[in-house]
Amino acid sequence: MKLNYKKISTDGQPLIILHGVFGSLDNWATISKAIADLGYAVYLVDQRNHGRSPHSDDFTYEAMAADLSEFLQEHGLENPVLVGHSMGGKTVIQYAENYPGTYDKLVIVDIGPKAYPPHHDELLAGLNALPLAEIESRQHANELFSAHEPNLAVRQFLLKNLYRSDDGYSFRFNLPVLTEQQANVGVEIPKLRTITEPALFMRGALSGYIKEEDWPEIQKMFPNAELVTIPKSGHWVHAEQPKRFVEVLGEFLGK
Image (tube, rainbow, N blue to C red; front, side):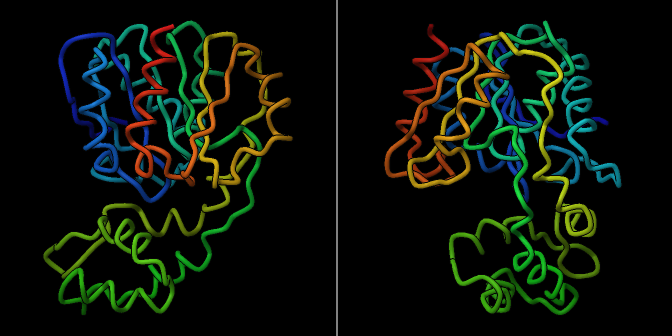
């Protein structure tokens, strides 16, 4: 599958960034410039069923890891740094398992390889309830969606995926597949081998995705990994604390 992408800079070692569920490469547009200034050629990538990448009924981490492999080969990117947030982080873990020797370092943001139970039922119900053909504007959609999601920031994030089509508004992400296969987003990435390449796990202090009791199991899979906790941050570490995120990233990549 040919994934949609945006290249931020042309010089330096390639650094690939994968977004989380319901997201797109646009989520990383602002901070990517600061990451490129560290000396990397940054590639922002839309994963399948998201952004402007193709839709598919096959929505598994095996498929998304294969997409990443195809992307790297298509663009001739050797020895890349792979960065993934949430769902993107699980894609990076699956890729690391399946394609040893094809990357330099891994950065996995606020997610672990363990299984997470589905927890987007209400969001998906709200998104599916939106009468897209009748929506007059994104603000109109926001008003309707507020009955399902009280948090304005979450609503704005999700409704960024709305765009005007010939039949009214549509979502860029593949809502039917995300709804039907939401359990696939949280599945465990089983340990197939020990991943010895340097890896950084970055978590938000206010997030519960990587708990203290998770770390010993992660280290069994990633013996050369380190864990950094970012204060005053939840799950969206790069958006909530962008300056500290770039600092920690730069320190890790400089080792």
